[in-house]
Each structure stands twice: as C-alpha cells, then as structure tokens.
Image 1 (cartoon, rainbow, N blue to C red):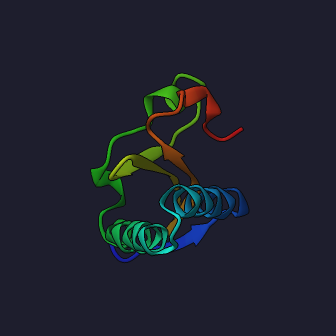
Image 2: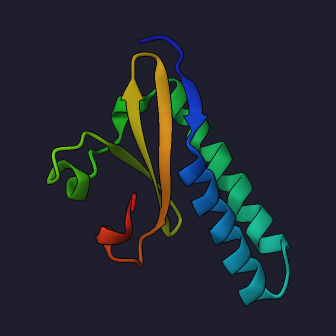
Image 3: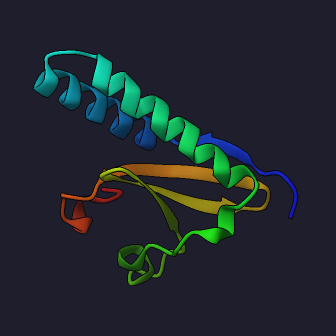
Length: 103
C-alpha cells in the first residue's frame, strides 16, 4: 500500500486546541492536556501505513460521506483518505452527540 502523508485541516487543529484548553482548565494544569495532544499525534502516525484498518464513521456514512475514525482514549480522530494523503478532519470527544461532528 505504501506510505501515506498526514495533513490536518484547520478545523481539526482548532478542535484539538479546544480540547487542550478544556482539559487544561479542568485540570488547572497544561500537563495532562499536553500529554493527550501528544498521544493523539503519535496515534495518528499508524495511519501512514494502515489507513484502511479502521472503521468507517457510521454517522457520516449515513450522510453520504466516506470517512473513517481512530479512537484515542475518549476521542475519535476523523479522517478521509485521498490518494496517498490522510486528511484529519476532526477530533471529537465521544461523549458529545455525533451531530456536533464536522459542523
């Protein structure tokens, strides 16, 4: 299959920034927030060699969109595959309703 490149949309990066901010405020420390963000970036690296090994996102599939997801803790990393690119479109807390995804 070869190696894929990973690109993050501004929306996904903003979602990750919001998650970082929320965790930092809740914990009154950036340490757990930094740890989570680092874990998400590290986990996404597996997509470079195995992008199709994760499930399709059922909520988006129901809307006619083809996206997959990777779960990291309580978060879904939503992505699409375009040629040899993995495009991260959102990072979504699984405790939220799926309708909040990719607004």
